[in-house]
Structures are given as structure tokens and as C-alpha cells.
Length: 214
Image (cartoon, rainbow, N blue to C red; front, side, top):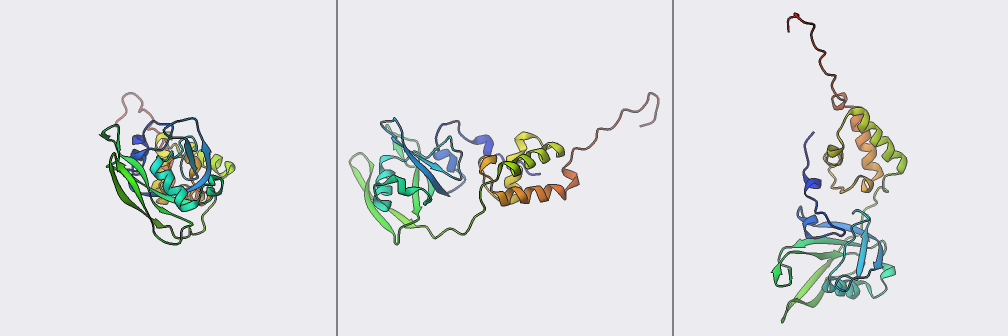
């Protein structure tokens, strides 16, 4: 089984940040938007395809884009989708640190353009493209199926640190946590493992008696 190092380089943080998107843009579905007690980042956007404990906290510029595209009522955002990407040119406190930007959004009929401040004293036109309607997707993995998957991993002797990367390798997905794997993906992995006896741990060779030929 190939070793996917993606999860080993995930940043330690309580929110999504630019390094989470180093592998490329990703499209997410909003589940909830909350106001939080932070002067700089007062909004937490929770995403179905990302660990719940690490919301996307959009910058003021990205919040302006969201309001322009979807209106001021954040309660209406649940179920809408956006594509996020890493912009390495984002500056903070005079340093170039990179940031999370929005490139596409659902529920807009045409390309959206707005002048935004890119650095102190400089503004530029920011463009967001419409996101096509999503194809029907499998629901998130059920508790019973997840338990069955974990039990199968245990029975096959697959180490914990290799399980998520193994799921992504088998399904071609990019899940960041076992709990955001879909039901279809989990069932696909279960079927794969049951047809692969070589995934099971191999018995250790028993020591030969003293004096026996190897």
C-alpha cells in the first residue's frame, strides 16, 4: 500500500489555513456559519468535508465577497458550496504568509467582480466564478459502517497511521479525517479489503529448534 504523507504535514491549528490547501484548490459544502469572539476573524464557517473543529475563518475581504454574492443573512449559507485555494501572496503584518481565498461559489449566475484591498493603499479587482451544480453525493459514513471499517483494519493488522492514507489511495479521495469519508467510500474500502488476503498480517516464522537446518 502506498504511503500518503498528506496527513503527516497537516498544520496544528484550530482553523483551516493556507497550508491545508497546498495540494490544490478544494470545493467544500457549508454546514453552518457562527459568529465567534475574535476581532480579526469574527466568523467561523464550518465545512462538511473538513474536520468540524477546524472551521474556515474568512478574512474581511473574503467576507465581503460572501456578502456580495449571497447576501448578509449567513443563516442562508448552509448547503452552499465554495472552492477555496491557497494564495501564497497574501500579506499579514508586512510579511508574505499566504492565505485562503475563494475562487468559485455556488448560487451565483455569472462571474462576480469586486474591487478589494490587496495591501495598504492598493486595490485590485477580485473575481469569483460560478460553481456548477454538484452531482449527487454519498452521505457521510454512518457510525455502524465506520465501526465495521475500523474493526476490519484491526483484523487485517493495518496500523492506525496508515488507515486514512489507505482509504484515500483506494478511493482516489482526499479525506482529511475518517469521519468525513462518505458511506460509498467506506463500503468500497471494505469490499477491497475483503478481496485482498495479502492485507492481513503475515504470521511470524516460528524459531527453528536448536540444531535444525535453516
